[in-house]
Image (cartoon, rainbow over all chains, first blue to last red; front, top):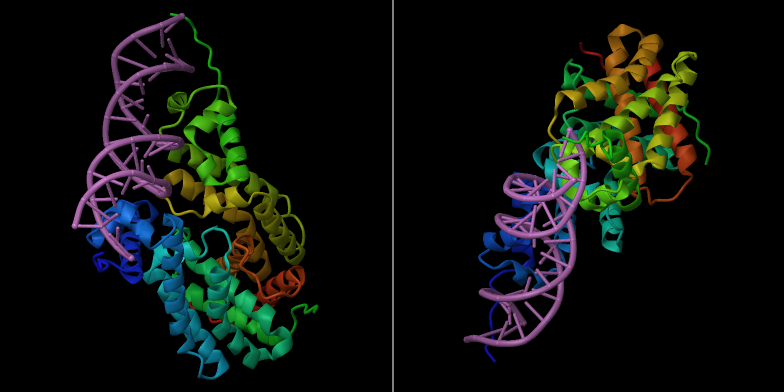
Length: 191
Length: 191
DNA sequence: ACCTGAACACCGTTCAAGT
DNA sequence: ACCTGAACACCGTTCAAGT
């Protein structure tokens, strides 16, 4: 009978989940804690999300959309500076949101939304490699750069670069070498 | 009074944990299930490991030692073939043991054993880059290759290469371009 | 020494009952 | 329509009690 105006929303729950995740890791994202953060009990969350997993997936989607938007802003420079800018944006995002970043590559069932969001995030880099080396090598070049970026930041976030040296300089070297390798045209390209 | 001969061992539990992990993911590795696999109840595991976390860490250590041994076998070829062989070994290991592989880069407290095991695993690749480009660029070159390899396989395992094309050829291209970039000597090397 | 059942705290999830 | 408390199954972990 009563209108029963909602006391929360998808966006509020996602924001709460993200804050809890970033503060205390995945274990801190309990249904109880997320509910408490928006003034509601745990079971109420099931009015908006099918499961804790679905809530985490929505959190991942929001983060991926944010990263995509940031990457897009670097798209209208010359190819090489755009590439370097995108690499810096990607790395900064991961360092500012390490837990959410880990979520993006966490193993999980591949639903359509996840695949689509990842394709959106990959587009800006692919557009740049296309301008850099043309259509034939654009996809493998983008994959090399994506793998390098993801691998680098996830090793960095895992705290696994322990052998000393200047990490900033090492990253510049790695990115520079990858770009030089792509531009060299000497890598085997079997289409 | 009785000698009370043990009905299990560290190695047996680690093997059981690894099998459960690979079959059903981290959630399948419950203390009850691991115990049942070796004919013992859950609480008995605490005689050998401080916690489930410690058991998983021991599983990770065993896997890392195995990977290290495989990588070492490729060390006595000429630098470039050794590099290509190591890359193939690394990628094969990850595809054959996807869940254990994910464990290796899972965020966790960095104890000494973990740091040491990772340094052991990194050594073969570092030795090869040293022969390839000399001492000054060996570390950043090894980091580039490690990041590329880890990033590539973890994206591959996450099922996130969705844009088509031949993945085998794309991997050969990525590795080839990285090596060419390293050999070009044109990447910025600020030590 | 090693193992066990019982117990505790905590979690995701369901659901009948409330407004 | 939305929220709640109670309940269920399950988990890691502890511990007194057994051999």
